[in-house]
Image (tube, helix red, strand yellow):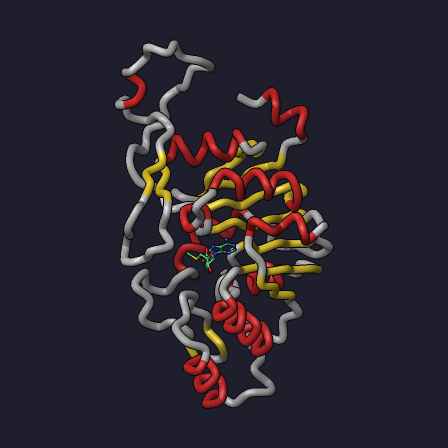
Length: 252
Ligand SMILES: C[S@@+](CC[C@H](N)C(=O)[O-])C[C@H]1O[C@@H](n2cnc3c(N)ncnc32)[C@H](O)[C@@H]1O
């Protein structure tokens, strides 16, 4: 992996450290001219350690491509996409504090990235399709996850969706029939059926974790929203192609 090169011309190291500290608690650890933005992350060097495991699934050369990073957080993935030459990168997030971090990181790196405060539920307002859409680590933070996938398909996905979710429960994926009789009961306890657990109170100390799907559920939701799964470069990461409405209807 090529590291993000922060030019930092306009800032001294001390100034970068000062800004990083003033921008609150970072979730993304980004190396800004030797300043780590989240050196004590509970997942280690995150998300670099995750990215290393699936970066090969995204073209090295993104020149001429438009990328949308939904739930961009501190901008780690947006910066990586720009670093690969994407002509346009738009990062959206509903949290202004994270967006301020992302804007600062992009400024230090001299990266021309647009960051906009926007919820995934409002993406119809973007009125643009993107060659590549990143939807990483957001699904389970939503109260209406399937709606979000439907909106991504309908309004912004042009070709490729890179999707990631926390996944828990059975890893096995059972074959699901096209229909079941009303008196069927066995499938509701069978391992490998699509299931998503609702989190009423909290999970991992994060009150914004609402739904935790199993693998079968993630795959079924992607298909149901009109995405064909073409790869799984990392345990939780899927590469998907957007299907047209006609092809979406015939996908099972
Ligand atoms: C776990 S972080 C994932 C960040 C990044 N995509 C990654 O994979 O490292 C979830 C992000 O989604 C954002 N988010 C949560 N709900 C959202 C919504 N409705 N619309 C847009 N972003 C949202 C949060 O603010 C947060 O930055």
